[in-house]
Structure formats: C-alpha cells, structure tokens
Length: 396
Image 1 (cartoon, rainbow, N blue to C red):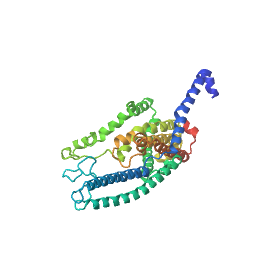
Image 2 (cartoon, rainbow, N blue to C red):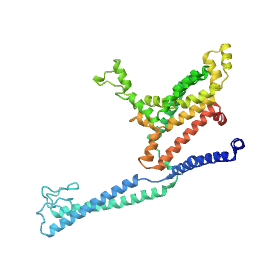
Image 3 (tube, one colour):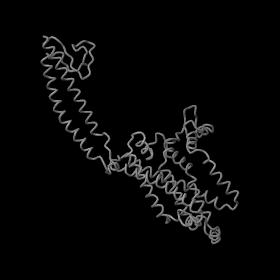
Image 4 (spheres, rainbow, N blue to C red):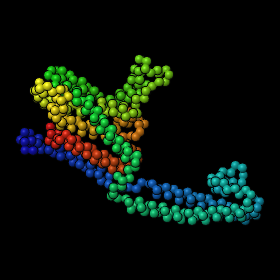
C-alpha cells in the first residue's frame, strides 16, 4: 500500500484504493451476501397445500350443485310433479331443468330417469351427507398443511435439502462435464503454449498468438452461433460430408451433431481456450531454456523432459488455467443453451436460470447458485493442493 502511494502520489493512490474498495463492496460483497441470505430463507410455494385447497373447492362446488338440484326437485314436487317428470341433476342454473334433449350437464349424470322425485332427492341428500363429511376432513388437512408451511417459512436449509434427485444428478453431471472440458482444454492448450513459448523467433511467436486472439475479436454469442451453423443437421459439416459422398442429403441422411455432449465440449474448448493457453504460456516463457537443453544433452526423452522439467515449472499456470476454465464451464449458460438444446440432462446453470427468471423462485435459485459456488471453491482448493501452489504463486 505504501509503495502504491509513493509511486502514484496520495491523490491517484487514494482514488485507486477507493475504486477498488467500491468495486469489492458494491459488486462482490453485497450481491453475494444478498444471495446467501436468500438461499437460507424458505418460502412455501404451493405444493400439497395448494392441491388440498383445489380439492376442497371441487367438493364445495359439487355440494352447491347438489343443494341446487334438491331445491329444484322439491319445487317440482310441490307443483305436483311427483312421479311424472324426469329431472337431470347437475344442470346449469337458469337452464331448462326438465329433462329436455338439449340440456347441458355439468356433472356426471345421475340416472334418475326411472326414479321418482323422492328417490332422487334421497340419493342426492345421501351424497351430500357423504361429501360434507369428506369436506370437514379435507378442510382440516388443508389447514394442517398451511400451518406446516407457515411454520417452515423463514431461515432454514430446506432450499438445499429439497433439491430433487433430477436436479442433484444435473448438479453432479455439470461438475463432471466441466472437469472434462478443463481436461480437454489442457490437452489442447499445453502443446500450443509450449510451442509458442519456446519459439525463438519473436515475430513467429507474435503471429501464433495473434492467430489465437483473432477469433476473440468477435462477440462470444456470435462465435457460438457460428458453431451452430457448422454443426446443424443441414449445416456446413454435414454439407461437407454430403459433398464427399459420406452422406446423401437427397435421402434425408444427416448426422446429429448438436444437442450432444461432444458438441458442447467442442464449443466450450473453443470458447475458453485462451483462458488456458495464456497462463501456461506465461509460466513456460519464464523457464530457462538451458534447463531443457541440459536435460536433452543428458539423454532425457521428450516425455521425461516435460514430466521432470517443464510441467513442474508450469504448475502455477496450469492451476490458474484449470481454475478459470472450470469456473467458466460450470457457469456457462449460452453454450449448452444454444448448442445443446434438448440435451438431457441440462447443465446446472440452466436450472438456476429457470428458477430465477422463469419460475420466479429466487430463493431456490440463490440456493442452487450457492451450491455451485461452493463446489467451484472446493475445486479451487483441490487444484491448489494437487499442484502444490499458493495464492502468491497463482497471483504471479
């Protein structure tokens, strides 16, 4: 801190410290605290209580219909229609209720055509008594469920414990997929970074790095859409296979590349390759080439040179690249959403998105986000432990 103020003066140094403090507090600490608080607040949203209320309303409506039918039957009996008319129970209020051919029935028809009015009334009253008894029990169950939900509302861990088996499977598979993307990125990027770092011709190295950076001059979404154009059923890749005779479009032959994990992995590696290349390149570039030459002069094989000299030196860069690639892959929503539509199971980031912006359940979304954040932090600690690097080495 003191060196900062000595280098830039009290005004510039104070502005720098203030802006960093504002960034940390406003954009990191406060949003994360809000997310953590929401994650531990349980808000009942329907479920069994709502279903019980629907059942109570249905039985209440049926009782109302039965009472109306009984009143109409009693009125018909009082007018001297005993044993002469045919009444259709459950007809709509205000409609012809005398058994006309076009009568609209809203409830299951009771076959009362051959019964007298008294028998119909007796049957309806028996049904009403049975439904009233059921209604008392159902209302008690509804109140019990509502009381349970109200008692459960507030701070708790239910947003985490209520994660269903499907979402938990998606959570685990997303972590596994992200690890696969990280591993593929390392396999692809390590030879590139080593080649560029060991290139003695600086112009050639600059051209190689420029070739990696040029695709990133395009918006990320456009890069992903470009891959959908390549991998679509009638896309560029299948068109090429059709041109060389492997596929026949006229016969409807296509290969489904999209909506597969392979397509998602491929696009993610393409999207995040620089986040793995640059950290590894930066560390390998600092390696003294004389060490490699000495190992080669002593007869070490290429594999042994990399295993005993290059890889140990590049561990901080590999750790940083792995952490960034894993974090980006686990939180990616554009790639699985555009390249893997219909892919089952979805990625966990898509589940979080749906809870926030489609279901409007921000508490569950916050809980899922916090679970993913904790998993990523655990991954960081594992990487730091495996590569035996600390924060200072990573910061370099």
